[in-house]
Image 1 (cartoon, rainbow, N blue to C red):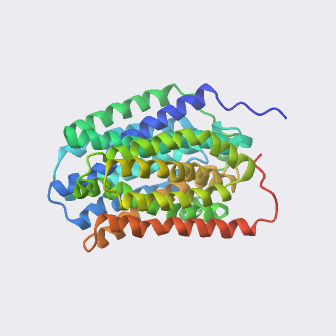
Image 2: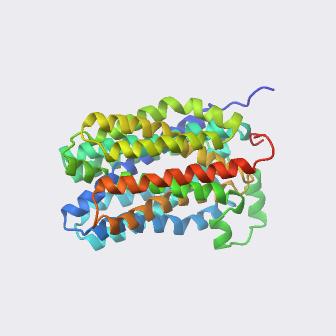
Image 3: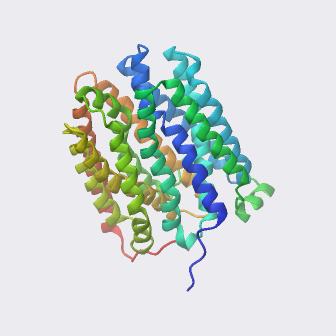
Length: 394
């Protein structure tokens, strides 16, 4: 049977636009904690700057998931991108931590909107039979944005200023808006049918796709471990006197990119379980290499191993979440996936914000590493429940 075409211009434009969106956002993420610290913020406020954002993103996603059941994709995607651009521009306007927390909350609403509609638009464009491979490539824009942009952001913040960092983030966000504007989106027929008879709104029903709840839980635990890295790696580098913190992110992105075609095809043929079990083990090892790092070479090694492990797990988890549900509820499932990411990172920042008062950042990395062991165990338990061979969604 001939494989449906994956690499269309809309798919290519969407991947590039989403990459610039994530880069624009992720450049700021690791630099906000040291920035808050530099203007007098407490350790608790450092945690809240991430937690507040995550709470807002999770809060809005049920509404967006419901809207996606009745609205075409393009206007929702472009609206989200413009909202992100506006909120990014507001960060240099004040150095009052309370005001920054408010800006961060509204930014979280925009982020929850944008990530949900962008991911759902990708699901609509990708052929269902190639969802693992297609969402793997789309997920590459997410993963590279998450692990390459921070290295650039750290370099700009440490070498120049926070304001220049924001200006470059705005430029990247502007490019994303242009690319989204010229993309030809696909809206499922069921969406137009739903316009005639809109389904009733349920906050819980639009927040949680029960069929996809298990891989969403695994995603929360997976991103808790990553949350410690993104929140504290710059502070860790300063404590250890390491000038090459950005190298961790660079080699993270490089190895995630190189391995993505292999892991995407593996998912479509064999499913998520063995892939996630192996990658969670690699992520655990990478966290300990990072925690014990005493040179830039150690940061390179940690980033490379983490790129193969965590970088391969994230798109596999997204494809796993989507594969468990129906086409018309893919928007809700996709929103739940991104809410799981924000909940994992946000809860990590909040909990570790308390612990950070009593331990070193290296200890935070060691403690967080055991979440990847839990990911491994839960995935193995689900794998043992399988009674039939994996079949890629049709």
